[in-house]
Length: 108
Image (cartoon, rainbow, N blue to C red; front, side, top):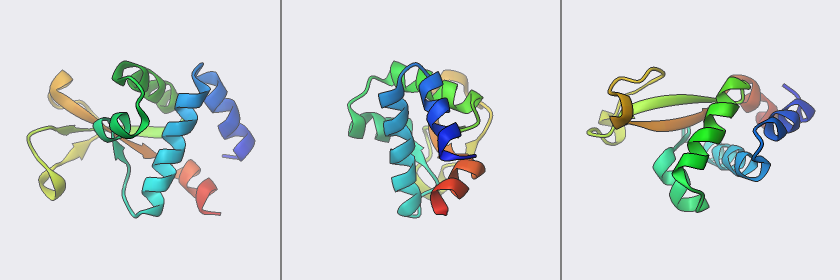
């Protein structure tokens, strides 16, 4: 992926500012040696509404920019397991990660 392709993907979401904020927050998490960012965490730090975040995250996933993992809210930290499929439906929490092509782009 190139920066131009990433820019085009951000525009395709229809909510460029939110999409950009999410991508940059995920890049910051990567720099801090975290695998990604939970929806709750991003909602708190960004001030964006949960529904809008989910909509943009879904669009970014379809465009190959992020992966969405799900975890059971009963576990915390290391005990928490994340999967790319929904294990408990709406009771599962979202965790966002940059895809490998985007991580490589930012690590250049």
